[in-house]
Image (tube, rainbow, N blue to C red; front, side, top):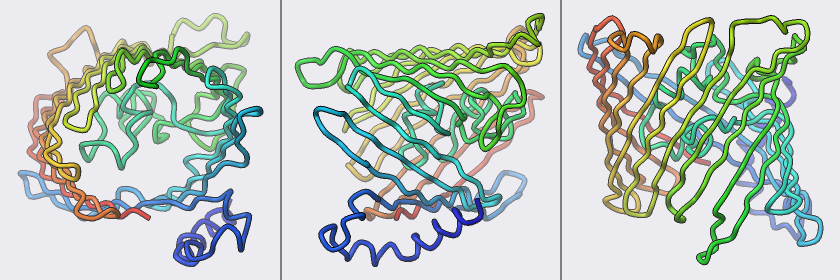
Length: 337
């Protein structure tokens, strides 16, 4: 693994050289795309707790090994996180036989929640993911399962799209897979597997409706387990060149607790490079006691002054389960390879 990190670092610093060499001179370059980004910022709260931070520093190799009308398309991706504790976050291969059927194998983002799978950090309107994603989808250290895995799992997944509409977009999309369920970069330590699946419908090109489900399938050695681990989410998202709006609701069982979370986010794209928006977050660790819930309100702006630079500014009102309140101002810059 150390060799992989060193290779990715070397490719990061030699990226300008690769861009100057044509595929005709070095044919293997047509199979490799180098990309990456760095996100760093500064935050301060009402108690004057403040810090500079590096949120993400990622570099990736990806590409198509072949593509044809007859045999489909074969893709791959390797992505490393170099900030804080270096680790592989993506390591997968994907074979799309036909639009209606394909298979993906390796380590990649799960389809639990629209925000987790469809909104990468460089696309996400706010600096932080919603509480629903942070606490239910293994995005952060505050996840109820105790697993922080950047929203990813290791396994195999089938996927496809059906029914082409008049404007060219597909009406129905599906994903279904089996995963270790232990997070990233870990082999399984039991006979159980986790099922994760989603069905999405696109009534319009810019509008999607989704139902996603996560269920632990206990093996024979744990057939008598009465402590279910599951997640059930529903959501709707609208994203056009003028505005965006998205909401999701999710229920789940973890360690004998039934929890619930939801968010609503909306914004206006003032120009192609500048947008403003707001989000309301709700999360109750104990769904039977909604009075002890986290409630966050975030307002923010995002600006792309240059193609490879993105600037974001957020204000957050955070009410925790113990009713304590924090006001936080957060600024983050993204530099894109």
